[in-house]
Amino acid sequence: MKYIEEFKEDERIIEHYLCKQKNSLKSRAGKTYLSLKLQDKTGVIDAKIWEITGDIQDFEENDYVKIDGVVVTYQNDLQLKVMKLRKSQEGEYDTANYVPQTDKDIESLYSTLAGYIDSIDNRYIKALLESVFYNDPAISANIKIHSAARQMHHSYLGGLLEHTVNVAQICEFLSGKYEFVKRDMLIAGALLHDVGKIFELSAFPVNDYTDDGQLLGHIVMGSELIGRHTANIENFPHELESLLKHMILAHHGIYEYGSPELPKTLEAYLLHCADDMDAKIKMFEDIVIKDNTPAMWMGYQRMFERNIRKSDYNE
Image 1 (cartoon, rainbow, N blue to C red):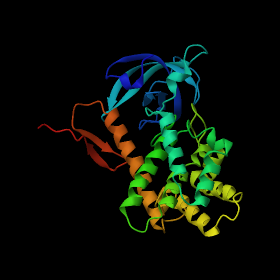
Image 2: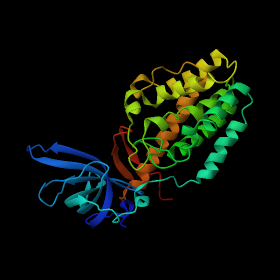
Image 3: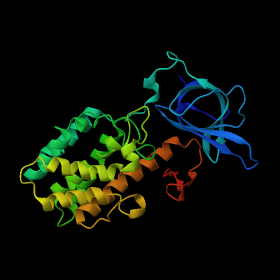
C-alpha cells in the first residue's frame, strides 16, 4: 500500500484509494474535467482527471477506486494527475487502510472523559452527563469511534472524543483562572458541545452529513438531546437546563459560523474560545504536517486568511 503521506513530486502512483468527493467541472476553455478527493488512513489529496477517455471507467463518490497517476505540485500542495481509473474489486483492498484514526490512546481519552464526569459536584449536572454518556446507547456506542468533523478538524476515527477531551482540559484550566466561572457548568458544556455530531455525521468510511445533519445540524440536535435527558431527571432545574442549552447553541460564537445565539454567559463565551482554539490549532498542525517543502513559509491558507510560517529558526 502506497500511503498518501508518502507521496513525492513526480512519483507515479498505481494504487487503490477511497474516493471521498467527485465533481464534474469546466475549465476556462470550456472543457469538462473531474476534480476528486482521494483518501486513505494517512490523509486526503486532491486529484484531477483532465482527460476523460475510455481509461476512466464509471465510479461514484465513496467508491474504492484504482488509479494510475502522477504526483504534481500545485500552489505548494501535492496533487494527483490521474490518467487511468476504475472501480476497485472486492478483495483488492483492505478497508482498514482507508479509515484515518487518532494517534491518541482511545481508552485513555475515555478514562479522562469519565474522570471529568466523576468530578462534577452538582448532582443535576452529573446526572445529566451520566444519562447522556453512559445510558444513551447511541452515544455510548459511538463516542469512542466517531469523528468530530467531515473535513475541517479531527475528521478521523476517535476525533470526536479527542476534541471533546481537549476542550474539557482547556476549560478546566480556564475555570481556575478566572473569577465567577461556574466550573461544573463549563465542564458540562465542554463534554456536551459536539455530542450532536454523532447524529450529524454518518459513520466511516462515508463520514458525511446525514439528513438530520443537513436539516438540523449538531448544534440544534445537541440542544434537543439535553432536553430529552433532563426530562427524565426528576426536578431538573429549568434555569440550569436553559443555561446548558445556551452553551451548546452559542459555542460557534457568531451567527456566520452557525450559532443560533451569541454567547451571553461567561461559561458560554469561555466554551466558545476553548472550542475555537482547539479546532484551529488542530488545523494549523495539519497544515504543518502536510507541508512538503523545505521553505519556512507554507503559503496562503484560506482557512486562516493569511500566509503561515513554521516556527523553526537557526540559532
